[in-house]
Length: 333
Ligand code: ASP
Image (cartoon, rainbow, N blue to C red; front, side, top):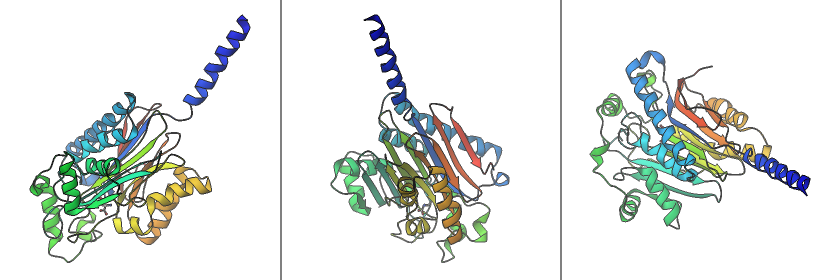
C-alpha cells in the first residue's frame, strides 16, 4: 500500500512538473524601432527610456505573477508607455499634417482569437484600453474616429482634449517636415533622429493564453484620416495560442501590405518553424527587400521572447520566469 502511495505521489509530481514546464510566464515589450543610434541619445535620455521600459515590463509581469490574465498584463505594460511623453503613443503622440493627434491601438487574445481595435481616436487618454473595451464589450473588432471616442466615453474611459497629447519634441519633429508634402520619414532630414516610437506588448499567463497589443500616434505628418498597421489585426498585432503573439512597429503601410504579424504566426503554425526564424524571414528578408523599416516583439507558446528588427535600434525588453527584466535599445549584434 505504502509503495503504491509513493509511486502515485511521484507520478503526480512528475505530471505536475511536465505541465508546469509547458510554458512560463513571460512578457516582452517594445517602444518603437527606427534610426536609434548611440550618438543621438544622451546618457540622460537613454537612462530615462530604459527606466520607463523597465517600469512597463515590471507592471505587466506583476499582473501575471498575481495570477492575472495576459490581456490585463498587456494593458498594464502599455499604459505605462502611453502615459510617458518619451514614446509615440498616448501623451507624446506625433502630429498629423493638420497639427493634431490621431491615435490607433489594438489588442488580441490568443485563446479564442477575440480582438478589439480603435483607429483615429482624438480624445481617449489610453487608446489601448478602448481597444480592450471594443474586444470585450462590443460585437465589433474595430471602431474608428468619433464612433470610437464616443464608445470609449460611454464605457467610462478617461477622455482628454486633443492638446493633452502635445509635446514640444514631437512638435519640432513635425515642424521639420510639415512644409514638405511627405508622410514617409525616410528622408535624410530625419534619418538621424527618427524613431517610430509606437509601443506594444505580448504576454503569456498561467493558463498559457497569449495576448498582444499595440498603441501608437502613427507617423509624423500623416494625412488626416490615415490609419496605420497598429490597429489592424494581422498587420500590427496578432495572437494565437497555437503559435505565438506578435506586436509590430515600423512603417505601417508595409506592415499592412505584408500582413506582418499574421504572416509570422502563420509560419510558426503551418511550417512548424520557430518564432525566431519566422520573424527573421519576414522582417530581415521580406520586409527589408521591400524597403519596409521596423521590427516586432513576440512570444512563442512556451513563453520564449523574440525581438527582431531591421533598423538601427528598437526600444525593447522582456521578463520571463527564467530571466530578470532585460532592456535594450541598440542593435547588440
Ligand atoms: N507602425 C506605426 C504606423 O505606421 C508607426 C510606428 O511603428 O511607430 O502608424
